Length: 325
Image (cartoon, rainbow, N blue to C red; front, top):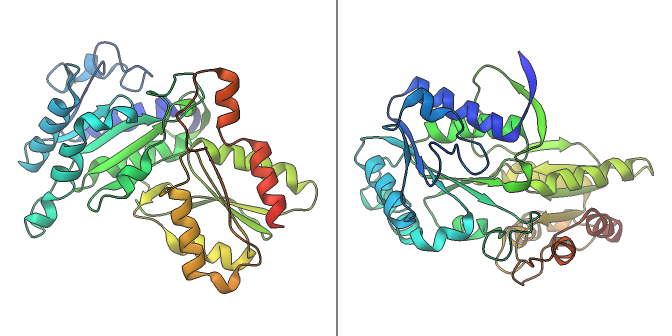
């Protein structure tokens, strides 16, 4: 049965399913238990599975993420650890990029690190500079980590199930402005393979690669331009590592034009990475320079008016598409 539920509810269903299936799956983090998570994703799980498997932790990211990495490496648990905001990654970055990411390699492929680190990113809620960043590039840059960033409730449920069942460390990034959006989601459990992009809308004139909230803005522009006879193909990578480069390159070879939309800083970011992929692997197919629509390299403003101007908008996406055309 397929119903319409929210992004947050879809994540909750994925956690519930995995916890019911495998007693080694535990949820831990700040306010994940009695409070149900600050965005309601873990609501009700403590009542069903108890405090042993849904653990409220102290405000000490290096401690509880380190505990999760150790428990996963020792084969004791399959932890789902919540880093409340991606902005807090600095406190526990050593545990993530020096320990979780490298153990499999350093033990000759014999170690399994089945940990999922769920975290929240993105602007749009006037949460200011320390709670609004999109720092996924810092994880993408680390070999050994898988990085997932869903944009719809359907993808959120299927990708989280796959992430929890994966034996490698997965960074699962949720945009805070997506928790309330609704979409069709099957009632039963299902998985979406990591490393498989989704073409959200097919087109022939220009390829738009976007992430998370930006997928919805890109689709809004694509639907508007369709009325003028402009055909835009919108691709959601869904997993940034591993990246489905084949789907992106095939689209570029078909359309000859590329716009990348990513709510992150442009230097050394995901958008520039996709641009480099296009230029190095599909240069002969390009009919126009690649255009990037990103946030500027400044801290996220607190002011709602400034924050709106700071974020990639539908107007900026439309301008970039018209430029490459």
